[in-house]
Image 1 (cartoon, rainbow, N blue to C red):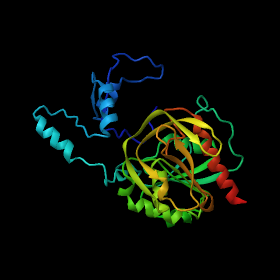
Image 2 (cartoon, rainbow, N blue to C red):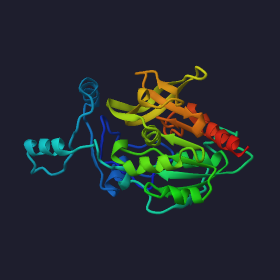
Image 3 (cartoon, one colour):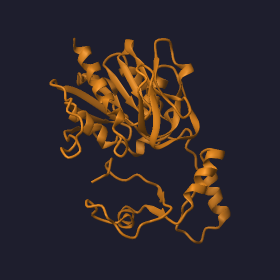
Length: 307
């Protein structure tokens, strides 16, 4: 299937035009059937472009979907006003319950990179809402993977003597999960680390930097990102509402990538601490594969640490 997590965590889905038929050869059920099975609300025939234009002007706004027809507009507005994302820990709802091993690689029909390392590296992945394709890509690059919950003690992870630690993507405000920032602080500098999306923001905070809520965030599969080290431009998949303030980072931290739409920080390295991070999704799924080489860069970081 196409699911990227243990279950669908959607609060709701808004669609402009819903097709009443399916055509993909892999399809096993309609979108309506999929949502009903999981008790997720959906609405269609909505002018999503009008919503986009409004958000572009006013920034992120809170909306409400409800199937309760007895609720009046005023009550729905109150529900929207009382919902908050700033300062709310959303990670604890999406992380795994216990550690597990991951072994699946990218399927042969989808694999596009034959640069698998001849060495095996043990990577511990902190699950802040990890996408399965991150795990598949690591496995395809020759890594042995142990996934641990968001609150798993750093000492227990270091006792496993991993070659590297990956801090995954996840929802919400990085400032709302100080326990995760503390974990990152206790691991950074001891083994090579790679942060993706939320993991990137947590690394920024762990280094003493600041994160901030963006006007409307970055969402979609067509964001141009430049690697400042080479000048290479990748088209990337992104989905985040917060960003790292590069001016707040300590000396020695290098901004390696910038989002060319707004010049925001999209990637960091800190050679002294054997650290790298990206604000976007190199694993895509869905999205362009341009940035998949980042996993190879992480493998090289672990390989050099063995020397």
